[in-house]
Length: 71
Image (cartoon, rainbow, N blue to C red):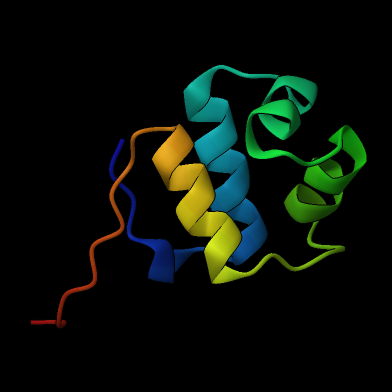
């Protein structure tokens, strides 16, 4: 999976990560220590998540966060 996060809103990114994992919202929430409702709120953009949670998600899903200069 490769996405350019700048092209999406935060809630879209977290949804894409979860969908790519093949997990339900409940399974994803359990994997990251959050409730199903919290995952729903993240995906609907009703609740923000911090960078620490994004790092945790990436660790659990074996993803890298790469920051590079625009060319």
